[in-house]
Image (cartoon, rainbow, N blue to C red; front, side, top):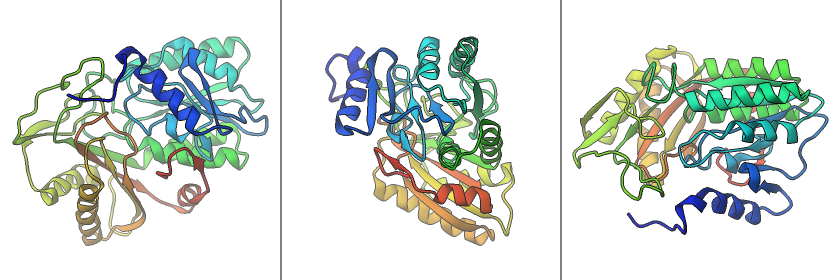
Length: 331
């Protein structure tokens, strides 16, 4: 597999350095902790919003650091949780009188790192709270999690709490908002090919030319089942049949619909998927209030996509509409 790579061990630091160089005056890079932070952070008048997770999911999360979204991101290596000391040092650097909110996708390694980092930061007098995101309906437990995984739906949580933080909400209010958004968000993904981590140099798993992994995780971990490749319309129908009943979403609901590319899918194909999802949701009496079609939370170069629904109300929609200024305009 051909890739633009120097030393695989330098893949993440070189990416982060490039990101900071491309956004001078806006982003700051702290190499010791894989930390990308707002150049004007911390702000004593707002809660600092921090996300971590592994690398390889870009633009999540380092490329959505900026006004109205994250104040900082401290990723680990590719598909690896950040070390506990990254979380600890980031929390200290981002300490604000209003506190620090740590967003954690529900993977065992991430939860352990953030729980320990939070405890150490609190011992140093930093007020921290953790909000866990678990929007994936594919499995209850996976190779990486206890409970449901946190996947592309985490973007809606980031956007909502980021907007509320800019408006002056306190830490308790941000926890309420984040939990509210997470509770009405559901996602399911499908992979057409495996991804290739730079350090491995070969596909992470084997998937036949006529197969797809239905319910795949963003690290390539298995989902519900391996199936024969189907048409785009059938794939969307099957995703909706898994996602819609899970909340459930009902006739009369107003939703945000996200079609997220997993890294190796052309945008044209994502719009084909969106077309079918819009048709089928409309047939169910569900109104599409906000639409998102792009790469939000990827799995390196995996060909595939995920579908996310968020039930909207006036509060959530207002926060999603709030302005944001980040490195990549995906939200």
